[in-house]
Image (cartoon, rainbow, N blue to C red; front, side, top):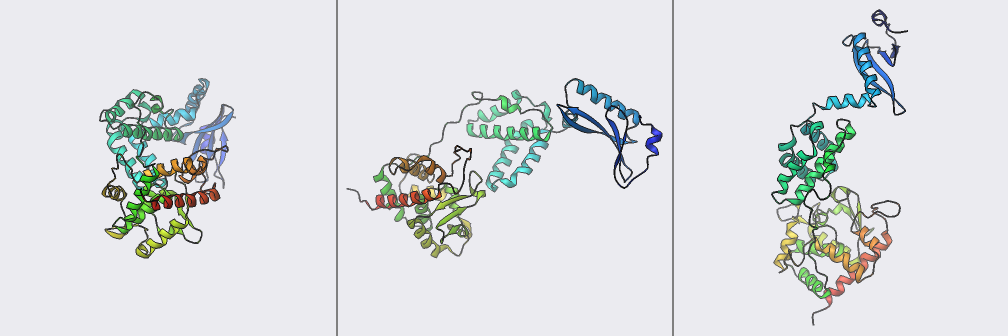
Amino acid sequence: MALTDVAIRNAKLKDKPYKLYDSQGLFLIINPSGKKWWRFKYTFNGKQKTISLGIYPDVSLREARQERDNARKTLSQGIDPSRQKKMARSMGLTFSELAWEWYEKRKDTWTPGHAKTVKLRIEKWILPFLGNRFVTTITAPELYAALRRIEDLEKIETTHRVKQIISMIFRYGIVKGVTERDPAADLGRGVLISIKPKHYPTLLDPKEIGALLRAINGYEFLIIRYALKLLAYTFVRPGELQRAKWEEINFEEKLWKIPAERMKLRKDHVVPLSRQTLKAFEEIYVFTNHSIFVFPGFRGKDRPISEPALNAALQRMGYNTKEDITAHGFRAMARTLLHENLRFPPEVIEHQLAHAVPDTLGEAYNRTKFLEERKQMMQAWADYLDSLEQELPH
């Protein structure tokens, strides 16, 4: 039997919510508090769904039936009424509002430096051109015009990073249900100028490497000397070494356990410590154990050395960091020579480099995979470097 206004007004309150049914999917929920909610139940793509049509008596019985009929008409056109309501609400949502909501939800998963960079890119390159636009009205040509402004300044890598941020914001909007698609996806390959691959200069000639290691061993500043020595032995990323903490070094297990927040892949990483690496950590510990950092900066024990300090030291030793080697170049050195000279398998090397290389099971990276092989490799690498350092030039 269809509902009447009298039946609704006389509905008694109960300890639990209950339903009064009208017709064609329309019903009213009577809450113990006295509030009465209109709902419309329907089936879309084989799934039962429900949408809210408002509160009685703000929405009368007649108005609720009209809303129901509108929803049924939407269904007849192959459109989900729930999705349509969300889209209608999103017309008032600006890209700025969506961007900051996405940023707040994601920032705690990033390093502070990355969070700062993303925030600056949103503020400088995105919001001035798209911030006040409604999310559902932004088109691919508008995105392209905004990105071209960055591209015209010859900031090619920044252009692609900003496009990635915009795309992630739109994909968040899709999951949230406030937009149907990501227009940044239309800016495919060939639309923007491609990023030129960045290759860090490095040394691959054994004699040149030996000379570099001897120069490092004679460097005047002790903390930087040990930092470069350990960078050569471990070939971690300079930023991972720069902020190394004593709590991460396990002398008994002979492992350096780098936490996920400092890793590029945001996953914990393990560095097996060779005899030489362990000895170097033990030696620098005597000088820096007053700090939480293995390599405290010159301005105080509560701050680590700066990453540029490593490249500056290489320059003071006479190396051109644009042509000869950079602090990051130790990784390319190890990657090449471990495979070509020491004959270690690429998959073992890549795991020690903490690169995302999916295996047959689809696992991109596992911190303990090939651990025994990596222990042997890291010892062989340290022995190899020592042999190069000790080989005097003819």
